[in-house]
Amino acid sequence: MSRAKARAALLGELEEAMRRSSAQGVLYGQAVANVAGIANSDLECMDILYLEGRVTAGRLAEVTGLTTGAITGVVDRLEKAGFVRRERDEADRRKVFITVVPETAKRIGQLYVPMQQAMEKVFSAYTDEELRLLLRFANEGYEGVVAATAALKGLLDTPPEQRPDLKLKKRPRRT
Amino acid sequence: MSRAKARAALLGELEEAMRRSSAQGVLYGQAVANVAGIANSDLECMDILYLEGRVTAGRLAEVTGLTTGAITGVVDRLEKAGFVRRERDEADRRKVFITVVPETAKRIGQLYVPMQQAMEKVFSAYTDEELRLLLRFANEGYEGVVAATAALKGLLDTPPEQRPDLKLKKRPRRT
DNA sequence: GATATATATCTTAGCCACTAAGAGATTTAG
DNA sequence: CTAAATCTCTTAGTGGCTAAGATATATATC
Image: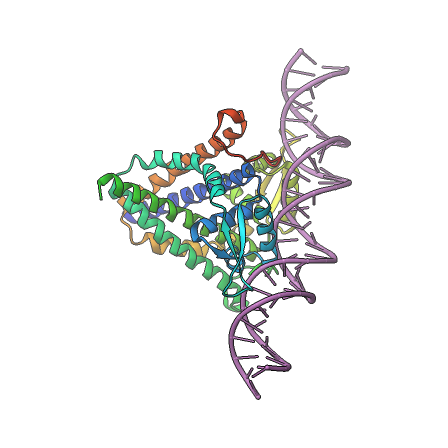
């Protein structure tokens, strides 16, 4: 097998492996939501809140791709469950900041313990050097996916004659 | 900073980076489903069909965590859209195999082109050696996530007194 | 300062995918 | 041959989503 072919095969394997593990990651998320007793999007919003901290309802809609109406429902449920709080922005009273109730953060965090332990075990077999490579890849991969998402959405906006023959109809949903 | 602390920091960064890129991956999936004009779970099932080939309705339910009733709906929609076909198993006539219509596979595959291109660009900066490390990690990571999912579900079945204080109620949903 | 437009969130009606329960068809065990 | 098990589909009901518009507040224009 030529060097180029070997690499192509490697890339193929890599692609499939990442796809599989990513799909499994989604399933883990579903299990977490299920155990926590909240809907999937609710958990997704909790995740965003962890990463970004204090966030407005509008930003949640933007990041999740849900409508603001849907976000109202998400926050209603999370607030009722005691996971988050609404806080009006005093500077601009139209805005509503959503914050995670600290104690609850811990409780939900516990549901990620199995995942953390599993990952710890995996990571333990790697040198610092190797982990840095993985980190580099994770960051570059993230940027790549962001770019790909934008490109895909861009496809919809280019006139049909100029784009590859998709034979798929634009569906009036989301952004 | 001690070596141990450096490593802990590295692990933390890594964890966040992977979480972010995984979340972005979910968003890409949503965008694909949106463009293809099908529901999210429908696309998830298409993905499973790609990976596993000819699959029974029951197995789809098992893998996705949906009920068999829901799968009936998924397959109905996909079949109506011309993406898959139902085929009764002649050996065991209770079973229904779902297969992807080949031509359609290509059409949906096109929606992953932006992602593939982005990943190709990222991968191009890595040596074969490095890619093999990434592959090893992807495979081990997959196994880890599978184990973590099982462990999380196991938490629910252990009596409450013996498990960490979750203060979360078991929700009557899914498996 | 008053009016018009823009922005941010919430409300409502209607839709669609999901669950739970069970029916129908077929296979396997006793 | 009958009973239980297995696999898919059907039905009724529920819940989260979108779309459209209401409400409240902020900003721009005259």
